[in-house]
Amino acid sequence: MKKLFNKLRQFIKQYPLLLTLILAGVVYVGLTWWIYRPNTYRTPFYTNSKDYTEVSGAYDFRDSYDYLTAHTDSKVVKKNFVLEEPYEITNYPVTIQVDGYELVEFGNEISVSRDSYSGKGRHVLMAHVTVKNDGDIAYFLRDFASAVDENYSSTKAINTDETFKDYNWKESISSSGIVTLEPHDSHSGTMIYILDDHRYRNLFFEGSFKVMPPEMTHDSGRARGNFTSRYSYIELPIVEEFHSLYMETLKAIPTSSIKRSNSTAVVDKEFIVDQEFDLNDGRLKGKVNRVQFIHEKYRPLYVQEHPNYPDPNEFSLAFDITYTNISGSPLSIDSFQANLARVSSDVRVSTSSNDVSSVVIAPGETFTVSYDNNYLPRDFNKLRAGEEVIISIQDGSRNILGTTTFTLKD
Image (cartoon, rainbow, N blue to C red; front, side, top):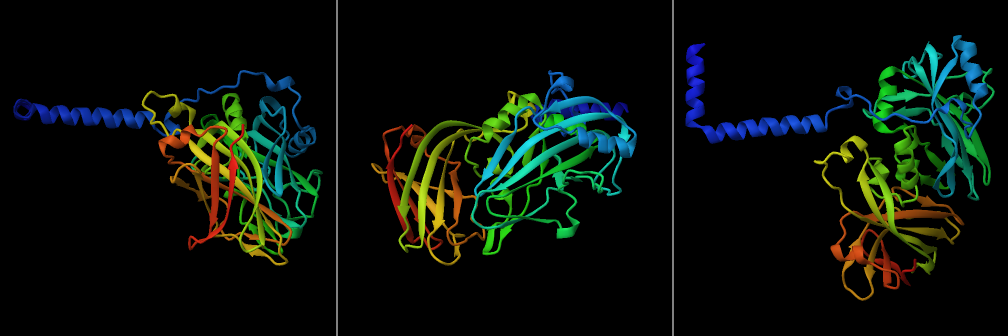
């Protein structure tokens, strides 16, 4: 032992700089791990300050509670979050309206389904959702059965039987899990998720419960392979602090960062355009709806607020274009790209399209595509109302399909 100590002392004397660098590296790695450590090693510190016991929610779940009580002999002892106002997530022509949801605690652990993904726990999150079809053709939707947590492990809505009167999205056996949504019609249903202690704990780091969106198709082709082309999840915020951030994020055009659900966003500037233009082949019309500058922040609040948090790209430029099929046959737009430029400058901003993978537009139907750029030249952050801008549409071979010029207006 004495020999080892003498050798160590000799090493320190011979290589003091190397030892200092090693120690600095160990400290740096340790601090970095501590900042970004998994939730398993954290103590939840987001708590909801409101007493939700007497809050009148956006939807009445008494029948749902009665169903669970009848099957488990356990009752709700506490409400941890209640949505007070419904909200919508629009991806025209289909809109998902979150009618209401509640996060409650039962007196003891309950288990209703034998499905291993349904879980057993004291906490239950139940949601009532309505899907509306504002288009002129029928859409086919798969259910909302699965949800994911921060580790992408899945939990499913519980199976219910005929004594549960409200429609359960998970239980669509008669139609192989597919719901047909006729034009200008809607369909509603309830989802009930039982959460074990681990998933419940993670909610206060995630800030929300994430439900996988439904697949959407129609007879004329693949309208939108999944709602995830714009939104990775249908989110149900359950932390008061995160709820307001998420409601603000829904006002932003979904960019490639936001749609992966790793950011919250604030619309820093928005210019309403609403300008139509013709594409060269005469089969499609386009309309530029709006242009936004979006300020994004990485999602986990406990990382955002840390002094060593790396700043994200300050702004994303985003705009959306609605295409209308004015021909008599289905049209593919899966290679459409768009560039934006000042008329007074040769500098163009190329954008990514977030929605056009294998998209087919049926005759007479419209389809809105969002475009974004997360790496803006510095001078583009200074775009102001009154400036003239040009947007050009091109195909995969970079052939120009159409252009439109307009003046930005607040």
